[in-house]
Structures are given as C-alpha cells and as structure tokens.
Image (cartoon, rainbow, N blue to C red; front, side, top):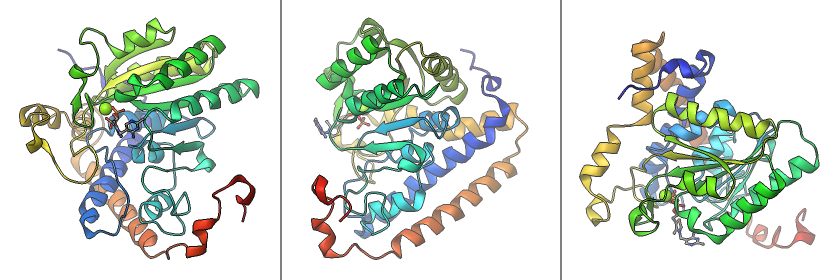
Length: 335
Ligand SMILES: Cc1ncc(C[n+]2csc(CCOP(=O)(O)OP(=O)(O)O)c2C)c(N)n1
Ligand SMILES: [Mg+2]
C-alpha cells in the first residue's frame, strides 16, 4: 500500500506538527514518570500513542476557533494552545491550575485560546460543543468553527445523537473529531457496536458530512480532516471525522495493562510500531529537509520547556481551604 505523500501537508506546518507531537509526548511521559510519587491526586488519562490527531488539529485550527474535549483531554488542550503550566498546576491541585486546582486532569479549560472545557462524563461535552456552534452561528462569526473531540465510546451515548441531529438541522459550524482507539475502558469495539457498522458511515446516515482515516499517519490524517474542516468553515454544515488510533497505556493511569487480557500484546505491538511520532520523524527525514540532528534539537528544546513547566507548577501553593466554598454556586462565582 502506498503511503499518502508528505506533501499533502504544507511544508510550513512541518515544524509546528513535530513540535506539537514532541510536546504532547514529553508532557505525558513526564506525567507517567512522576505519577507514582503520589503528588497528582486525580485520575489521569494519557493519550500516549494518540498524538497524531491533536497535532494535526493544532495546525488546522485558529485561536478564534472553539473546542471541547473529554476525560482524555491533555493533548486536545495543548493542541489548542492551552497554557502548559496551568494544566500541570491543575493536575497537581495548585492555585494556578486552569480550574483553580479544583478539577484535576479531566477539567481543563483555557478560554484565552478557545478551549472551552473538558469533563469526566462520557458524552457530556458533545451538546456543549454543539451549543458553541449555535452561538457562533447566531453571532455570525465568519468562518469560526466549534470542535467536539469524542471517543468511539461516546458514539454510544444518546447525547451524541441528539446533538448531531440538532447540528445537522441547524447547519451549525461544528466538527466532531472522533478518535477511534478501539476501546472503551476494557471493552473492545467488537462487543459494543455492530461489526459491519462504521462510525463514519453512521455519521453520514445522521446527515453529517463524514470521512474516516488513519490517525497515526500524519499526511493521511491531515488529508482526511482538512477538506471537511474547510467545508465546515465555509458554512456548509457540520461534519464528523473518524480517525483510527490506539492508546498505549492503561485506560486511566500511567501503567501498561496488556497483562489484564482485554487486549493482546500482539495487537499492542502492532500499533506501537505505528507510533505517530516516529512515523512522522521518519517521513521528515526521508522526504523532507530534516536531519536527525534537527529533530533531536527540537525535542531537547521541548524537553527543557516541559521540565520548566513542571517545576513552575509544582512550586505553586495549594489553594486556601476557604476556596473550597467559593465558585460552587453561580452567585459567588467572583467571590
Ligand atoms: C456517562 C458515563 N459512563 C461511563 C463512564 C466511565 N467511563 C469513563 S471513560 C470511559 C470510556 C470511554 O471510551 P471512549 O469514549 O472510547 O474514550 P477513550 O477512553 O477510549 O479515550 C468510560 C466508560 C463515564 N465517565 N461516564
Ligand atoms: Mg475509545
């Protein structure tokens, strides 16, 4: 099978893509390394192995676009330009966390860059993202889009069908980005959805424009998402892209769990060999103007940035105990 050409991605995006892949990978590997210290006191879902889709989104979205995400949202937040130190401080429960240290890993928000939030309840942010699309349309916000990140498991939630239907009927500027990693916790797609029914086809039956592609091969991923995003931007109504990918670690936490038996080591190794980061590095080195030293230099730069952000986040104090009583109800949001 021939690979989609690197030239499908404009070359001025190559460095940005590689930097984002490194950033997400380095941040999450560092979280995994430090998690056993017991200082991050919140459940944490890593997307190591799934960096391809958010990296592509990072070069396709503008700061004015909006996005919402799920329990597995670090990569989506970073790809939208979310503040790294504020994210890490949130995971450490510190005062400068993006949710004031109250929410942890699953409650990321950075309104400055249009990342409007993530929540722990599967499917919860889908209607919110569609509502954002409605707001954009009502405000006649030219060519802005609302992106709803969701997993294959969220396709099984009623909220998805209601929200997708509304988005289609109202012709809203919403792009659903479905990262199909084949699993919802320990349940494979095969025991959850009919085997001959593809998510992208289901979306088309609902009236969404749709396409499916490879989430780990960046040129292919870019070529799948970019045309549909352009249609959504042009006011042609909502769309769904389904991208195949795979999480390497356990559903929640820093460890590997293939020994549990819900998926095979062989399946894991096959996906591991299709690492979106290594594949893109190889493509740049074979077909682009990049040398191995150039990649390494960029990676070291990102590593230093990540280490600094961890140090800044961890050195912050915890919120005062009285803070537990503020921002609980609407009337004291500022109190
Ligand atoms: C409404 C609801 N049901 C169940 C859960 C428990 N739960 C948390 S994450 C998750 C898996 C969701 O799978 P998917 O949407 O494919 O996302 P992935 O974890 O694969 O990224 C489940 C079932 C929940 N948080 N909310
Ligand atoms: Mg999944």
